[in-house]
View 1 (spheres, rainbow, N blue to C red):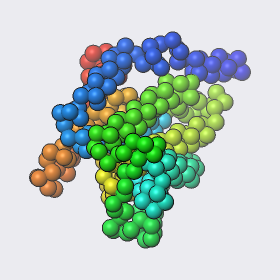
View 2: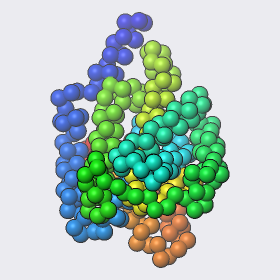
View 3: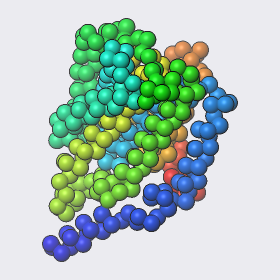
View 4: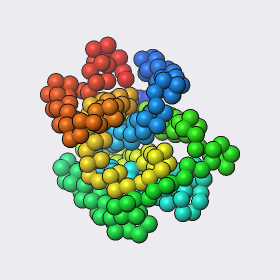
Length: 331
């Protein structure tokens, strides 16, 4: 038994081939990454940069959420807490403490990591609907804290957050300068997530998702793996929220409301659970729809509901998942 355990555990850890592609990217993923980079380079000269920055912030948020649900199988209904608190602390650090934008983003991510460590330590002891409800309850506690806390500004939020100068040199008041910084933050987070899920640690996460009792029987301390994944996901969500607050110069209760947690679930489902590029596509669909259909008012929410139902019924694997299945490639 001990021999079988050692062999199986080693097989899981060795299932990632260091020489496969670049950083574990398959050929199809490398092509998709190339298309993404070209799009990011050309897009600001064709589309409104602020819209693109919003899309990238939500794309990073969705990718962070997908790390937890797509590769560990943990459905969190409270990720808005980390996204919103990252934005609040980054805004406070930039406006009140006068810190540079890169330090403000780091503080936002660190705050989300701390919250994620506490919430994860409590939540991962449960599974399924109980885990989801605990994360929602904790997120609502954070929401009501933000309503009452003096530094958040209550319903007014933190306004007029300065973008500052990147590393004290590059002024971010110009949208194009800010755009390239957001691109760097997004690509850094995106590549980090890809590296995590294609590392031996990521393979253990997938084994936990598929069969947690089996992973436990092999000697893996699954709660520790899940907690670390929760913290990583929360941290990247906080970085996304912090970046968004600097882009728009405001941090409000909208970002910590439970509806924001629902939006990121929708983005991930539309794009494709457990796919590398799925959350990016899902975020692009939802943010584009919200932006260009805003004049329709509440009907945007109805359309989102229809899309959600359609994906659940007809496109269970999401947009990218269905495309990957048709082309028989890994995306």
